[in-house]
Length: 483
Image 1: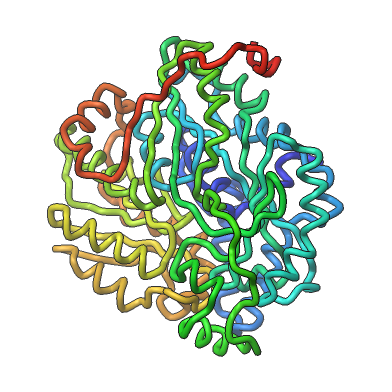
Image 2: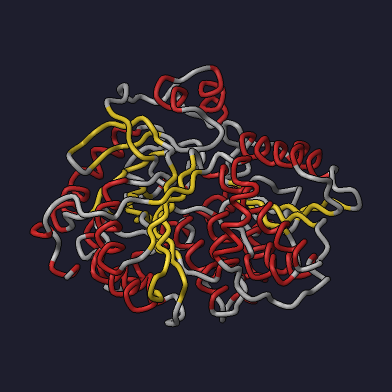
């Protein structure tokens, strides 16, 4: 089976990979980069889906998720190395002064775009079909269904770690027909190593993106955990223990349960979608030592912690280029546009979701930064009035802080949060908003990044650490592909 077939188009890491790879090829990011040749058709059809009655619209959304999901039988053909080869093949084969490996992050995509460097994700999503045989609000039944496919996957891939996630808050619609496996690489593998050795310049810098976010889990094996819930509007305690907001949400969804039946967690693991698994660090250290690369860790406590730093870096860069500084482009989840941000002279600020915590993160940034003449906002809808969803009025209040204008980009305000056509409307809306065009700059030099960090780095909860690459043991345990 082709490696491409295993990739879920709406996975955060896959979308971010396509956005950055497209940028490095000199391209923008229409329709999430999945249908470049057919995006005009999708841009015409999805607004039609938005006008369907809600049950039919939700059914169409579920079918789109099932179309890219794997059956348990198909999952037995999964090949992590083939997928790694697919990842590295997205990027231009040219020489780079640096690269990043590790946690997925939208702000990181903009950092890499500014530096003109690739990023290799540690985590990727495999969606596994159950075709409606498992009720959405029965997480343990999802766990039982997935136990055998998980066993086969891990037996054939000893270098992977599996995080089986169940989020009936944000992913409620998709869970009607599938369950989510997120796999994390504990080893780099041949494809990643060869790519880095082929494209990095002598004396290059290898960055490690390390999101420290963790989540309570139920351990299923040495390399297998079950994560109930995910980062967003509800807390881990609400997922595992319930509470008034959970009871009210489930009642609105027509569920007979007052809470999700799950035993208390017995472990604590890197968060499935965003967290960094530190087992990968050993390979990164060995490779950097072998190639005499500088190894630098970018360590941050949660995904949005990187967003203010990257936004301010862009504003600082624009100031040096004598450009206007007053336009903020706020992105949501997988809706992003690194190419048009730079082409339009907009400062990018990335949010994880369209929830109240993300709205607070944006509000805190607006409070701390100089006033903005124009604010532009994309919102990625998941089709559910989930716990912690930020209502449109909250977003309008934030947009009102633009001195001259504040506007949604590609958002159908009548249909939010079931605004599924936003995944195609965001791109033409961004192009239209970026009416002022600027020449694409040369890549930001690493020395200028370091100068910015020396001057301003203490303002952010992000650590930039030199990693130790000194030998700690003999090379007897080093894999053959490292020699």
